[in-house]
Figure 1 (spheres, rainbow, N blue to C red):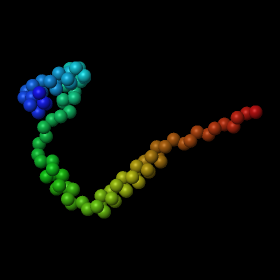
Figure 2: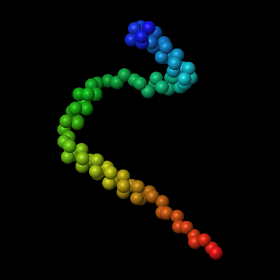
Figure 3: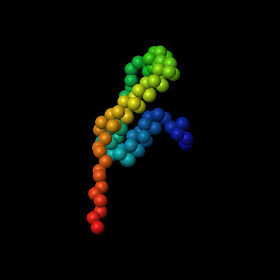
Figure 4: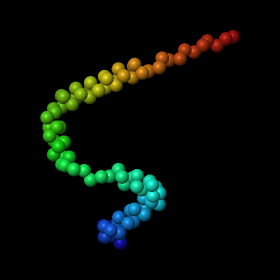
Length: 88
């Protein structure tokens, strides 16, 4: 029998058994807890804010974030250790 022919209730049961087998009951619950049905229309909402941006604004934002990351890395970087010369 093909997977597409299995009734959804059986498919769900098989899937849950596989999750319990691989992850244990607590792992299965933790895995399933990640997936929740959301509210609203993500695609419409995404267009509402993305359509306002043009490629120049996006590029400028990327460049700004990269510069900020470089500046932050410089302030948190540890100074290089100096090696002592080997004594003869």
